[in-house]
Image 1 (cartoon, rainbow, N blue to C red):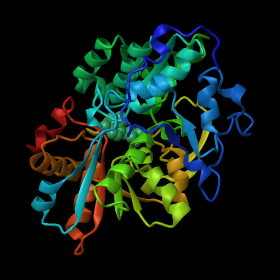
Image 2: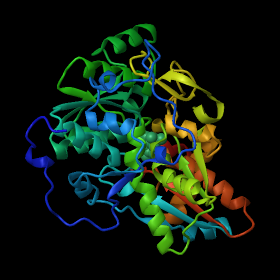
Image 3: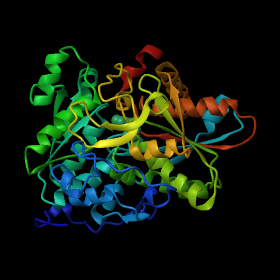
Image 4: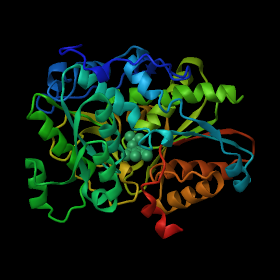
Length: 433
Ligand SMILES: Cc1ncc(COP(=O)(O)O)c(C=O)c1O
């Protein structure tokens, strides 16, 4: 839906795109045995209509939130930008296998090759594009680790949108380079809670020393977007359209595994904060399990300090602290839960993607909780074998996979979702080196 003439940065350049970059996103909703419970209006508790979401999101993304078709075409401009770093590599972790003495064949799908260093641009570019073609001029968002805020700032720079980010206080203080990264792309970054919003001021009054949380930062970003018709809000995880955009990861991995002669992996591990890199990698495999009866086991690895899938309740809850978002059916620790200031800032979210929650609830996906110490130790084992220093978030998937690989006695195929690199998160490793 176009309401303004396309600005030049939105038109495809006509450059060649590597053929392995998927042409479509894969929508798990088409293959689920039961539909994902709808998001509800907090006042009426009725399923949301498009008009309820229109102040925050463009129509294309609202449509994708409830879409049921299996494949949705990726706009050419978005595919061209994906082509700057996609397909991301799938590596066989030969040296890790030898270091562990495992009979398993271990692969990892590495999203740290994106310009920002993680999987987050896969949806940032799509969201910025759909907003820009509808005439939005500015996006607001929250960020935990800073990867998402930087990704949206990157996408805004390429597609001509202003970006304003509220970064969780603990990570704003511990990761000054992330703020500079956002600013380098032209974004603006505030610590959250801030005194710039009503929600932020109320939180600062009631909890003056709070380390912040993603739920608080979301409230601030939503509040600002809702007040300006030219400004929309953009979420880096959790919502169905975000899961959809990330499925380029798993679709590529399936092709790459087939080429490597291991078409059907036994177990796939992904870290889970709001669920997007996990869904992106695993949903195409889950869809194949459901359609063709393959038996790939999918494992969500969450931090034991913020264990929504393994300890939370499966119920309707708000996505933010102030209660400004719709009600989402998800595994939640409660919207007021403030997780400890763990190093993996991107995993500090009280809730979980409704699609991932639904899959876990139906028994289609497993979940485990990983201690921070075990995760970062696993990150070092990985770095010393494979050379890449994983993002602290990704180390949770690495730890799950290493524990599994050490336990197996027969050859099997393991895939790790390496959602990002840890180059700007090195202080997280300093107590462990
Ligand atoms: C590298 C990395 N991995 C994982 C996550 C967690 O988010 P999600 O569960 O949506 O993939 C983040 C969030 O910031 C991240 O930066």
